[in-house]
Image (cartoon, rainbow, N blue to C red; front, side, top):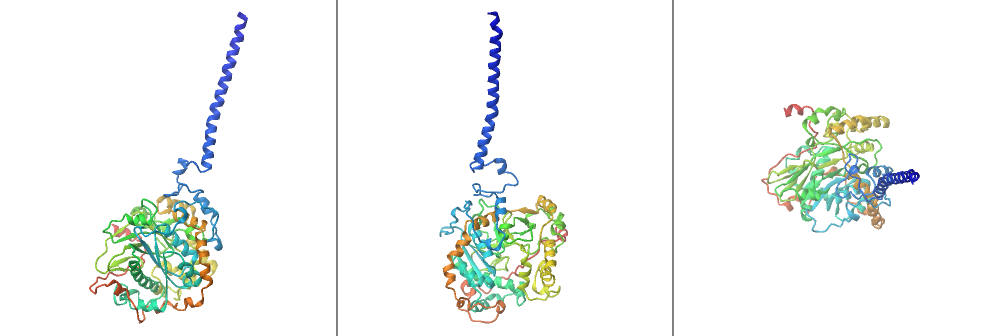
Length: 511
């Protein structure tokens, strides 16, 4: 009996060792199994990693939580060739505007319209229109000429619900020649001058007509935008212009959107709306010490903080006696509008985002490329410098100038200015436009218009004329003055032109 005790002790020790080993194995395998299971769920899209969700590199806006694929994938997979600008893929993964149903009902409030004067092609106008449809805009008044008035472009635009195309015909020019604007002083300093001044007058006359059309269509708000600008409704309860304007108090007549300016990082951009994500913030959205303290670095040797204008765009509530006050503001013949400036929302201005923008702007203006003559044609210093370089330099010299003045190639400087808050990353428009393109919205619009295009004849543009005759006498069947019934004892506030942001001299003004 005494001899069996060691055997029993050894057996008990062996059993304990086996149990301990199995327990350790179980404790080792359990977390590995759970980790593998969690990874499988996340890989299949069933679980959102909270660390990834709230990391600085993860960018979402309301409704994007279930989007498959990352923004970086979207950017990486974007087509760079011209033939792919309006192309499609098999991806149907963007759920923010489910199924892209653009047939807005009559109960949509508030009703928002955008008016523009454009000569751009479909590669620019289609993304611009449908992005703003996603934002809640229901109606567009497009005053077209040049490429935009050609049958291959305009007939496609005419097939889009909610889009009204207005051609620059002799009848239109005669009607605008009878506008009361020509007899008023607020726009007089811009009359009978070339290039940008002529465009500014034309935009104002088109805006005046758009007000009449907006009232007839039952619109609540009207916005004037160029087709190189997108509304960024930050600060709203959802990423929606409709929601943003719905929250505006009823006593507010005009809402001002400070503009941000695109800061391109490459010189080969083809589709700015889906390739550009870095923007320079407006002075109104920055602390003064940050703005002035980093002014020289942010300006990079250019004439001003922004390449072009810095006084934003605005939305006006449709009401009696409303009139344009230049391309950037609205006014009222009978009162000073009650306006508010938004603290988060902005207009994203894609300024010279493509190298070809240098020559395209040059080709639209016949001024001499001298420092004195360009002052007659352009209001802003950078536009003057760009016109001169595009008119006098070789292709290689132009590209060097473009990279030096416009492209942000210094990654260290970019990171520094980003950390200061002067530059910012905005991905929402890029993602929306990319998903619109990938789901075939643009190509389907063009395809549906093919039957119309095939029957187009040259007679469709027989009445289109040059814009150089604006202001000449002519007969009009109906004028904006008659429709609006504006009294003669009206107030006149001078038109607000495109203005540069404050310069360093603004430091002393603030003091």
